Amino acid sequence: MDRRTPVRGREAFARRFSVSRETLARLDAYVDLLDKWNRRVNLVAASTLGDVWMRHVFDSAQLVELAPRSAGRWLDLGSGAGLPGLIIALCLREDRDIVVDLVESNARKCAFLHEAIRTTGAPARVICARAGAACGELADGGTDVITARGLAPLARLLEITSAVRRRGAICLFPKGEAVDRELTAAQKSWRISYKLVPSLTRPAARIVVIKEARHV
Image (tube, rainbow, N blue to C red; front, side, top):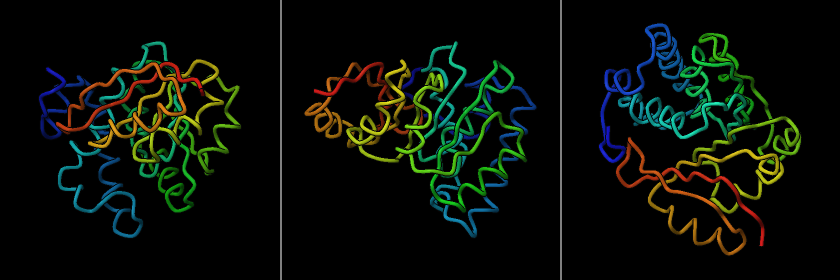
């Protein structure tokens, strides 16, 4: 499929990623849990639940193919409802040894993440802390890939993740229509080696893939 061509729904997800029936069942369980919890905890915008497979599951899973196949340790900052980190963990669960650290500072969202891991069997762990503090603690933890969806502007993300990136981790940051402005702002302080990949789910969105960033 051309990455510039949007697709829709659970069936399209299954065709695109060729996951097993067991993985689909685990993702179904996650979607059901998200719907139930979202009625009392603001995990995602309620308006997005009608298209949850495209807006959240597919949107998260597309990051998998942008990471090195050898990547076993992922760090998801501002995980919230487990997006994209928990979805990545479920998609890769049968494919390789993987652990995804889900960093979230909100206690109620952390409770949801714990329950989602218990329900789905996702190879993930919850770190209930602010992103900067977690990155400091995980600086020597062998992280391969860092993700963050809607947490902060790019310049701030580079600052927060600097300790982890020194160990060679790459960054996969989904961004919307403001991506060019964020890159321009970030490049005032950072020399960045990056590429922009069109999103499969939103025509105007891009995924910023960063292999190296040095403060200038």
